[in-house]
Length: 344
Ligand code: NAD
Ligand code: GLY
Image 1 (cartoon, rainbow, N blue to C red):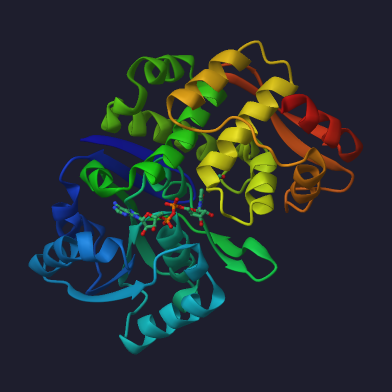
Image 2 (image 1 turned 30 degrees about the horizontal axis):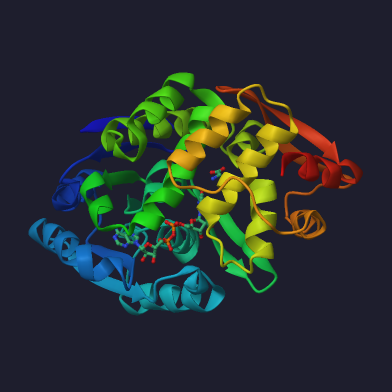
């Protein structure tokens, strides 16, 4: 097992390894005080792992209640959120009790936002079960739900009390969803880490999960400790995301987030004349991720502009200078279309 410690507004451990689900109860005891634990999970994950987590918590003498919602981004909304708050209230959770988010990024974001707001905040444990959640969403305290007007528009910064990443859960992940998470893993290599990038080139999809997840989490930990509230440096984690979100929205969300981000990273590498563009495109292809799209540049431009990260007449793009080094570049909106065109 590998432990990475985050020292932000709250200090907490991220434990990564095999067989960790059975230790949730003991880990929750170490956090102290709680009597009742609410497991929040989705309709795919709970049948697979809910029983193990429930048993572990029961064995540690917790009273356990479980809230299971229909899997998918469509559930990350105000209705499910209010249902969840009401569930916590009906079951009498107090401020000293605990929430366990068992699932991917949707579960983590929803349960985290409930934890941030129920009784003005209660503690929660993240148990990520997708690669994306393991290397990104379970760490760093961003929680959110979607509004009819857009994704992640209501949320809060709220750090978990513990992240338990049991890599065995990734064995049941559909391969396509695993590949989506790989886009985020490759992202850390391009942003910060030539050695990580080279290791991924060498091992492809068969990379050592504990080692690589731990390395990505260390990078995210460092960013979060420097810029917990996303006022500058943390923006770099959006490499490939701004244009990627435009492509994802243009596809009416039929193209997954990971694949859209992969195309976004390939576009910014090429358009910014990064000398490592060929390596970046090649590794994405090696992981079965796309590097281009047939959508017209006008469409990508239009949807990219509706991204919430636009500020005034500029949009911040994260541009790779070489593998391991990227810059935040405020880009005038009137240059964006030709930039995207150059990257296609
Ligand atoms: P997800 O939670 O919907 O999981 C993807 C699918 O995999 C779902 O159908 C889920 O039921 C299934 N699944 C999860 N774990 C499984 C397992 N072990 N075995 C079998 N099936 C499993 O989506 P995701 O890709 O994990 O996360 C995407 C969400 O994360 C988005 O809502 C995005 O906004 C959010 N996000 C948040 C942050 C953050 O910092 N908070 C960062 C990145 C993304
Ligand atoms: N996933 C982006 C962030 O945590 O800031």
